[in-house]
Image (cartoon, rainbow, N blue to C red; front, side, top):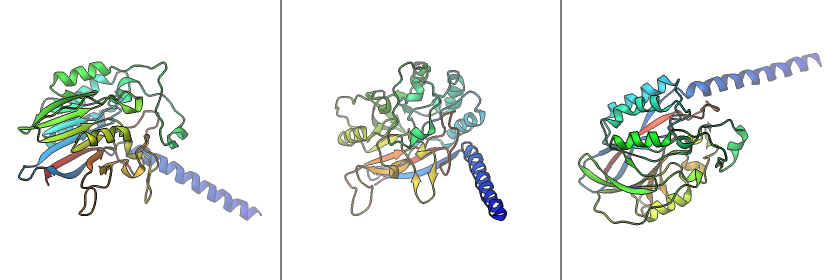
Length: 307
């Protein structure tokens, strides 16, 4: 009996040690910033490549100097266009460090942006179990507001396009792109703009959270590519299974990376009528859940190439 108890305690101790080690690594992974690359064959034949940097979900706090330095380094990728899909802030005092992080991009590349819930409201502690729900949208009854308007003003002053429930156009590498965006669907702030016609080379949709209703509207609107964030790629992923949750109503398979909407995209047999969809796993976490597992913080350099 004594030997059985000793063996049981050894197993329990091993499980605790493995859990502690896993938690320590999950915290370390939040600092393992990476640049992912993907090629999107979406341009008309004969067009040269167009580099689009997709940045999302920085969730910056004032003490995250390593993240600031990494974001600043992204300008070395020399994108033709930067798209920021929101959730930049995680603290009331983050605006200065955030603008310092974005400064090289704001001053060297055209851009466009939408806001996420954590541009409007400060994060709050939550029960981690709530993230096992399919959709965890938050109702802010007494919100702690963040300087979202100051952030929007700074980005628009640099020439970036504010796509908050509106359309616009941008010239990237001498080529005209049509843009449409919505405010954060996770807060039910999305109002799709009225239809319009243009002679742009490419139609680009931008949203913070990839809710199905928004993706359907952008697809019906004729978007060639839609960029979104919000999911954190699941934040905690299991090898062989992938994301546990998406924090919205999109399926787990499309929690991050390049896909098609509404179908697979592309191959010779299917998905030809679909819109390209890129969901960024983002580069941050809530300060109250500073862990990632098998889901490194990221930005993505998308190369739009000829079909």
